[in-house]
Length: 499
Image (cartoon, rainbow, N blue to C red; front, side, top):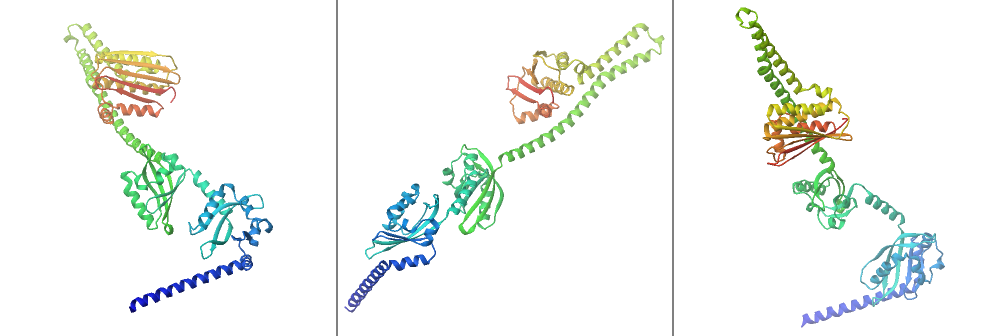
């Protein structure tokens, strides 16, 4: 019983305290309402752009600083709330009305917003507005006291910042420590194809190539520790499924757990580096091949001299030696004729050898005559059917280009003889303005075009296709190979008339 009485006493005590608090609040509100002149005097004394709106009397009062900031006279505002909407930019009116309504109805706890307000100079200025409502015991609003601050300079600075942000050629990003994206400039859309909404809805690592994920995780860890990450490169997935190489220079803002990044597309540089490394490898291979070719040509020349010219010269010497002993010769005239015949064959062998290496007809007549002569000699030596055709007319190539074209065709014919198992070879020369194209076409076994096949051909065939291509490339020409197993091989050589 004593416990129940103690509980009733406590409840009654709380009711008394609550009633007294409400009565005190009502008195304060009444005093505040009754002392409007004192409130307004206090507003002027603060030296700020303040305003006071009495919701019961519909009276509006603005501070002296408010009038000084906007350039208006006091009578333009006093007791004239109906005119207020004309000062607010039409595009901002609906948002301002909604915020005030929600605040007065208690749907939001704070009332603050930015809007454009028409000043007396005829220009709209960006202002930041704040408001605080006073309510009666029934929670009905009695009056609103608010402030204004001119933020035009701040907005202009932000617009300039946003303009630079949006027009930047580099990709700019603001993200979080968790790898999320908060803000992106339009360069992301241009470079990667994604819309900004597509990227903002995902995390950084979801776009990174699997091989580069660990690199980016390490960069994020460093940024969380407060260390900037400069020049971090990774592949970023584009909308079409391809990847672009991006270089990240990122700086942390630990107080807000934000990361600011300047990102550059370095795909072209990476491709150029890869191409440069490939060219270095190819040049090393070409240097090796040139050394092999020089050695092979020396071997071929030595073999030709030893097996041909040397043997014939030895025979001539033997014949001449016999002439020292005429008594041992049956028919002296016949012996002399035999010696002359061997000498003629030797001269022919020497001429053919020198002609094949660099025929005088190439220098004296031109490329077409030289290739025709080469084909004739090739047919005699190999038994393959050979045909040369010419289309169009043009000026003769410079001597260095003629030599390059001749040596390239000669090397291709050697490849046909060694590897193609062909029975016929056709050469077509086509003269077009500024260029000469040569087609070497055989009916051999053909091959599947690949780097492995080409590398093997280089090892087996002197200069090889690679070396021919590189020599043509050095003078602005090119080589194309078209072949299929069982369908022969067609090699197109093209070079400008002036290197």
